[in-house]
Length: 412
Image (cartoon, rainbow, N blue to C red; front, side, top):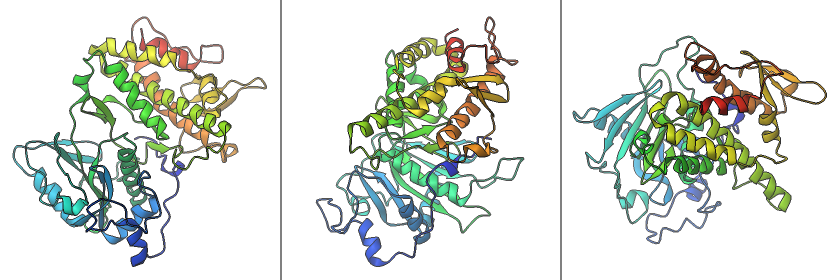
């Protein structure tokens, strides 16, 4: 079970009941052929949806989208019609269904035409062509409590809707033609989504450009202020030679900052954001390359090229997050420490029981969650039964830093 970190994102609070005027701020004018936003819109075309708007859509049974160069409410489509459409495609004989821990995905691609409601009128755009096809994804209907594995909560699914739409807008994830949450027909709330299809990134790894494409994807993610803790090749898709991230579940995706609301009124502010982006990019790339080293053994040329790019990243900044990452060493399998001149500060690697003294130190909580994910590889694949011959993990304060050992292992 991945650590549940949804509380590190901005809380999704229940808004007051929306009025017709409030809804008009978001919806487009159906007769506006020029695709301009409604004059009452109080955010620019370049900004993604808000968490409050996502909750309003859920309460109203609306279906949201971020695709075709636009965003908003899919006119004339309810969560119920989205759900029935997803199941209809999923039941077609020649459509492959892939099942994950929490979701089923109908890999439609270009084998079938899009739903009848994917029209210019419903989206308020002039073109709704999907050249690479589409997929449907929905929360599985057979989830049961098993140890700590629970079906996602309503708050977690609403956060996932927000992050998925945000990622689509920021060019991190694929376009989303429809997404909504239904909490009326099951023992637990369920998410339904239609998004642009891509090809498997595994085949992309054969290209000499793969390392740079992966780097570009990680950089876009960092520029959007996102830290994806479950980043791996299986959670990417390739669309037109562009590797995109997928799976923005709230239990392993954190919005560290929003570049659209980050105060950059001074040069110092701009530098602070740039430094934070560098740190996030480094953290994402390290998680990804660690996963690649174990699972993608047939593409070592791409892995090694990716490591070379990581090693060239300039982390000599004053950013708090970068400093924390650089100070880490593993004292034991359950204890991580930050090297400090006045005495090392150690913490249990546990995302559920943070030390109370860190109550206001969210960066430190983020770093511990990041180490929590990396520890899986350190214990099982590096120092455990799946260890690689010739490499031995070293524990304790006298050992090399966690980062230097990880990079040494990746290239061994």
